[in-house]
Length: 371
Image (cartoon, rainbow, N blue to C red; front, side, top):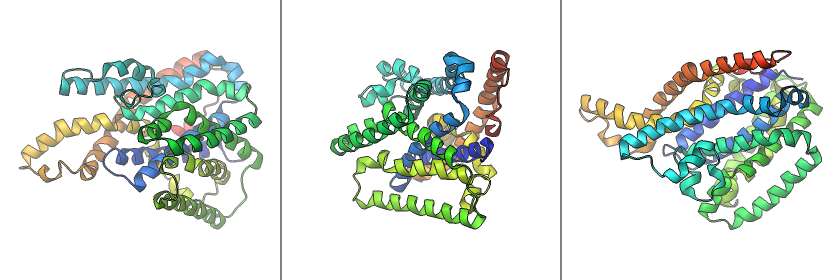
């Protein structure tokens, strides 16, 4: 069976792809880019469930206990979320003289804002934090999904949810469709898809294929993905299904097949495990959380200075957001890397020291390939 490190590398690089898709969606790119972003988020939650099953089995949960498990999984989520929220609040205060829609502040701070049906709350402040709200629910429920819910029941929940979602989404207006997109329990079902994919992967093991055969599998998965993108744009698929439901089968297949090929990847698989994409994946959480604040800083502090020095160089581009995205991109990547290096990594080291002091005995270093 393929190593844990190989699986981490692929899933890490895919997070980088998802982060870039989200960045371009929020900077004026729509149509296919939106669908790439939506599909990437579905795969992100499925991959999270897959990796959770791989790295946190019943024995580890018994050893660390619920408090230890929750601490290990949630500290980084909330630490970076609070840092990005503080940066955004300071920018809002500087620009508007207040803290924005304050009734949304506490739910956003606690990452429970996506349980409120008002868009002023579930899309408040740093809108991308909806996915953190979803992943927090997945982490909170995982020990119980593993210990107290059988695989058969999880599969039944997935099927019933798919049927109910298809019915509800088909009747939802634009606001309702967006709310379903960010609603944490729906994302938890995608997380459960990843859990079930891991069970299937564990039963299959590593596939004995040649590089050519692996490339054929890669290209087949890519062809299916492109076909789904074309189908999504054709008008034959209900537009609300594009947010998540359309991508569920593909996410399940990828979560099973890609790890089975680890170590014998085809051409596309080797590209997705290349060092640049893995590096991008390592800073993906920082890209997700800070691309908005960084864009505001560039727009209000950097561009005016450059524009003044360059004789109005940016004047014709200031209202063209897709063009400005390429101005924001290097600042976003560099800024995210700096935050990762000088904030995230030091915090991880301090946390690891505390964790090892408390749970030092037989602690596997499963995150090594992710740093």
